Length: 143
Image (tube, rainbow, N blue to C red; front, side, top):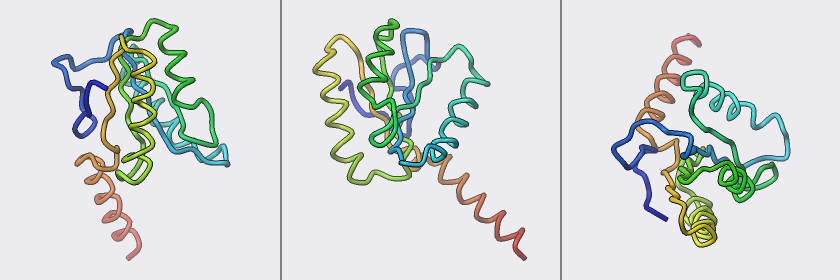
């Protein structure tokens, strides 16, 4: 892998993704298909703001596509850099062990492609602040 991204930011000087780059929102997955609706809304919100971006969803288990299938499709379309953003609240076991192994295997399979693995989205300061703000607003509404 090219390296881990701090706080989900892009590591090079370019601030925008291009057609040869893709962002994969990578989530755990669940047996209930409705579980993924918030993730689909995140993807839709990104694309509503920046429709030129290549943004996909992939899942660790229970749902499709898995990460390898998603990456295979992206590379078939000409993508040469994949940024994997774990849509997890924290760096638990999957993000400490399983996901780096998955991304490492993809890097070995596609040595000419750049793979960047970001930290869990829930650890980004903006996300922590958004959760805190929501909790405080909830307390105000429940008076």
